[in-house]
Amino acid sequence: MSDSNRRTDLRRYAGPALIAVVLLVLVALPFYVGEFWLHVGLVVFAAGVGAIGLNLLTGTTGQLSLAHAFFLAIGAYGYAVFGSQTYDASGTTVAKGFDLPPLLAMALAVLLAGFAGLLFSPIAGRLRGIYLGLASLSLVFIGQHILRNVDTITGGEHGRPAAPFSLFGFHFADDDPALTVLGITFGQAERLWYLGLVLLALSYVFARNMLRGRPGLAMQTIRDSEIAAATMGVNVQRYKAAAFVLSSMYAGLAGVLTALSLDQVEPDQFSLVLSITYLVMIVIGGLGSVPGAVVGAAFVTALPLVLSQYADSIGFLSQSGQGGVGPGEFSNYVYGGLVILVIILAPGGLAGLFRGRTGRAARTRALGPEPAPDAAPANPNDMHDPTGPASSAISK
Image (cartoon, rainbow, N blue to C red):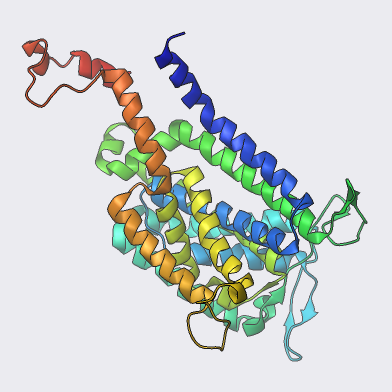
């Protein structure tokens, strides 16, 4: 085997091997870390699912959406309403609940978010760019009004508790039933960690497989040129609508995980800031990249939590109410600076840095070394021959 083929095989298996190693580490972490880090992990898993969904819409299909927080709220509140009992919300208002099995409540919440995306998809199919962004922005304001004023469903300003999760009689709680694995007591934090990890893994695999198939190619073609996509036989309106629905369902699932991680859902958790935060995730990770979305989500969500936990050990940070720069404020500075650096130095995000190297290697293998700027082509006729070597390589 030549050195070139050996390097090609190494590159081919490097990605799957890295994913396998990361999964093994994530599976083993609950045996070695405390409850704080398990909570951070669950928040990261929830954000990763939501970031994948937004990247399918914005990064792959090219539809700018500022409504992601709205669909997350539908998932979170939908799970709380479907899975919780009717309860006294404020002494004067009774918040209704259906007390359904948690798995069914989760499925219905995701479907409800997808249905909301379907209702908005005709507008999304007709608009593009900043106009679609502004239209989707209205959903966040509508959602905030509903969450704060429809007390009989949402619980009003104080929100409502999320239903504890259980699956086929197994409760994701501290001691119902008691569970010990290899001498480690598995409580609510450990159990929810594995639930979030499984849902993120399934979301990741589904998105990757879809992007490698015809739907993914159609969505990328629409992003590059709607006219070219229509000329190639792609139903542009249908694919744009489908992308919006799918992204909404991902957001709904992320909302369910968010509700489970917080135990309580409130209107302030799903403001416009959350939508912007998700845009930051996919820009930093890399537009159109599924692994990049997860990496961006992990960085953006974990940084403020970690800084808040260890603020006392970091000299230039201060706790809330003490003046100075707080962990959340410092995180915003980091995000802002990093977004600017990514846009200027690495427009493809963190994933684009790796993709750029492998892409150049692939082009070199397909087309051969690039000629010097003043070198003449080996056969002058190839400059005008549509069946020349360059055309053949691209057609492959």
